[in-house]
Image (tube, rainbow, N blue to C red):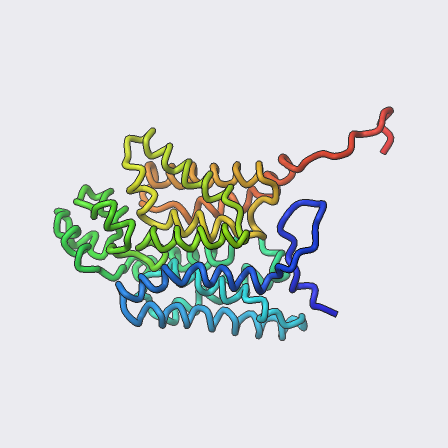
Length: 323
């Protein structure tokens, strides 16, 4: 008998049996992330590959050990732990000490995923929580971004250089410096995490996932569209806001997580809009220049309520109050 964890229902009833299973879906996500990994390797060197490999391997290891201890069936073959590890790596500075990255993997897999019951039971995206935990616990290393040649010129344009050395374009913009051009940010000539530097590579992966019917375009379109519209409202450059930071990675690869996003199309649209609103509010009004991870986490918490409000009601209550 097949392990019950190999099948993942991704839509509201009625359900139609399809050949897709969790492992195939997760492998497609890994394939979709390869273009961004290739650009990161070109920009940052072999260290990008090393960080990704460490996060993927330790995520699988922690899942295997935890399920052994809890006497649960082995689920490392579904590739979900690999995806969590790779996405976590994409949210980290490429030069972060590897032992810190391993701590992030432990939090993501053991604390957020397995202690809540495993795949399908976690309340939030494990990689996001792992990233936020590392940001809170290791603020210095988590802000120590590797600097590309183009970004070193941008940093010199800011008066208080020592305060923002290694900063991302969002931080440089907040400090009043000269940011890279939109084309440079779109192609991937900036510093930041692997999931921030090339909007083009992430969009390519997103198109692959949509064509393969792995994700619905509802959340990414709503998320990115909201960021663009609010950028205009706040008098900001929408292209810059879309290409800077983790908006593309978040909208395409993290907000679309099956487990922690709504199952209905209206719910997904509401979810994406909410992510975009929180992202821009944090960017504009908070002291922290980026808001994607916190925005998605907040919307993850609201997902059950969104599902309940948008679920289609098929049967009407019987007259007289009878059940």
